[in-house]
Structures are given as structure tokens and as C-alpha cells.
Figure 1: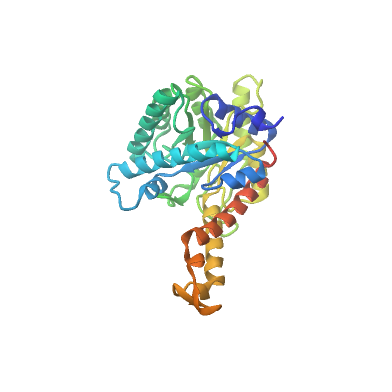
Figure 2: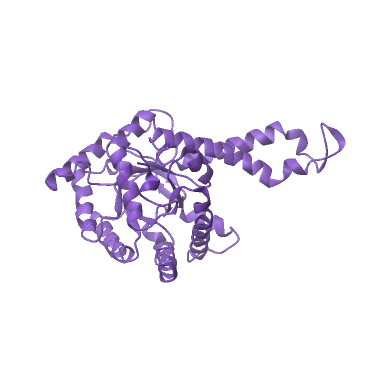
Length: 350
């Protein structure tokens, strides 16, 4: 049985998101997230997660727009979501449409997206997005959980999935800077994960937890980051024991800072119930590779509009047209996404 026997193609919402993630736990595979990868997902025959960040949303709307009240980020996230919804079904793959880290200072962005979800729900009986992430990991555990409960109650009413973070992901990514945090904060304790599970389970089963196990955003010299994916197994064992042992892996876990991780670390994390892994930094570099190589290989065709190594009167439009060299970046990005799908056991799943 493939995933398309369980959920439809296109953007998933409500219980269909949970069905996808439960399938991932059962089959021990996970879904990578990246942008502009519908084609890679189709070719790998795998479901995919497409997510927007606060900064990426503002960029999508246009860097010329003011964003002092998150208005550009709200507009950009909404526009990106509508774009994904328009094309997702055409590729024939299930898509989880998600928003990434939202710290406390960015809650106006979250509020704006949630309002867009509610407006879309009134018209279509489903939210615009599949899920949103609240990253209140720098707050106290009590404030983190209480705020998540508040928002999740509102989200669950329209079928939205919640991803939350307990424990801090180190490094810096898209304005989220945790480069100087205490090392102990990078490793979440099982008791804290279970407290989150208990609080959110009272509202809906449609949530996931990004529990820190030494994760760091970005890529670094080998040996500088000490991942302990076995901690994820301890989270599952602790929760399973507290719940009576009837479910081996009751928690849907998330792997942040996946770029630069070894295949063994990824496999271990997936085995312990990770259903989503972020690979943003690796995909950014992969995108650059295609464009960089094209610009280098076609250098003689990119100096003037007319005149190149083939002749002084030869036009160069077919080389400098942005659709040409941007497409080269998309190709190398797609190849990296396919690699991530393979690492996560997420190939031939449709």
C-alpha cells in the first residue's frame, strides 16, 4: 500500500497530515522540507514538505515592502501558500504546506497567517496551510507550553497541525540566532517532551515536537556538532512507559538542523520516530551550484547582449534569460532533495 492509498495528492490538511506522519513512523521514513521541489518529489515518488520562513515570506512578497508589523511576511506567506496550492495537485504528490520557526517576537506574523487560514477555511472548509511552527524554546517551559496550548486550541478548530520546539536548536538561520546558548539547552530531557505531549494531546493528536538533541542550524566542520539522536529513543520510551506501553513510538518528532548530518545520524533519528527533517542550508548551496557552474561555463556568452565565442553578431538572450540560469539552480536543488528523500527512506512511497 502506497501513501496515495491513504491520502490524496495536493496540499494536505487536518487528519490527512496525521495519517501521512503516522505512515512515516510506521514505515520508518521521514519527509524532507525544501522549496521549489515539486518535481523532485514527483520523480522520487515521495510526499514532500514545503515550508516558508518569516524572512523567506518577506522576500517572496518583495524586499521593497515595509515589514515593521510583519505585513510583508504575512502577505508573502499567504501568496506562497496560494501558489503551492495552485500547482501541487498537478504534480500528483501529497504536500504538507508549513511555516517554519516563529519566535515570540514574530507572533504577529503567526497571527496574520492564522487569520488567512481562518478566512480560507470559511470559503473552502479547510485551512490555507497544513501546519505552522511555534518556536518558543527560548521562553520558560511553562510559558512555551501555555502559549502553544492557546494557539493550538484555535488551530485545531480548523484542522491545522502544530509543530513546536522544546530545547534550543543552535546556530543561526534566517534571523533565528542561538549561537551563544548554553550547551545544555541543546539537549531536551524526556520529562519535558512528555509534558508537552500531555498538554497538547488534550486538544488534538495533530502535533509534532522538535526536541533538541544537539542540533545546530547551518553546516560546520565535522566534529564540531555532537548530535545524540539516541536521545529521541529515550523520549519515545519514556512517553510509551508513561502511557502504559501500548504504543512504541507515540510522539511525532522533528529533526531541525539536518544539513551536514551523516546518513547514519539521519537513519537513527528516523528509526526513533522523526517524521520531518529540515535541510535548508544544504539545499541553498545545492541551488547555488547549478547557477555558479552555468555562469562559469557560459562566461563568454554573458558579457554582452550580442557577441560571443560563436561570432560577433551572435545574440546571447538564450543564455542571460533568468529562466535559463535559474533553472540550472533548480536542477541541482532537485538532485539534493532526491538525495535527502533517499537518506530518509522516502522513495517510492506513493
